Image (cartoon, rainbow, N blue to C red; front, side, top):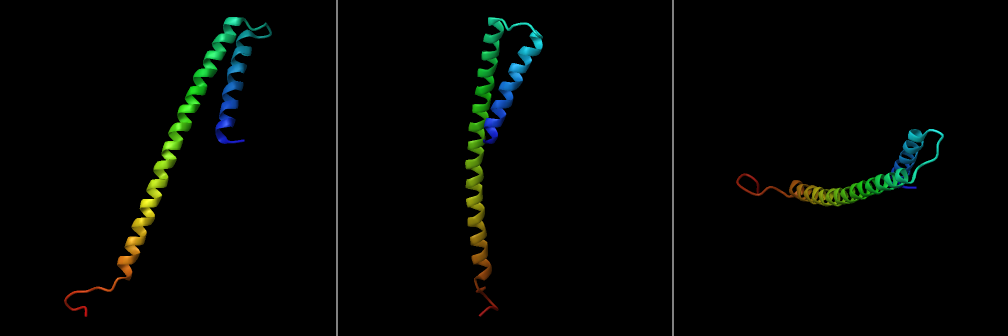
Length: 89
């Protein structure tokens, strides 16, 4: 089970627990069920947005990693290159 699935389950459990706490031992009314559904949909959208943002950040990190590796290779080549110029023959 992935991180986001655990978060989603926690959100659902928290929403259901909130409704039951507000009603005590009484039954849940249909209006409360609709409110709960609405809240869960909003939270689901929030999770989807967070997943999208995380995926975008992952792509940015991969690009930065590639750039870093390229820079390291260039610096290594410059370090290994013999110096040419006055006094260096």
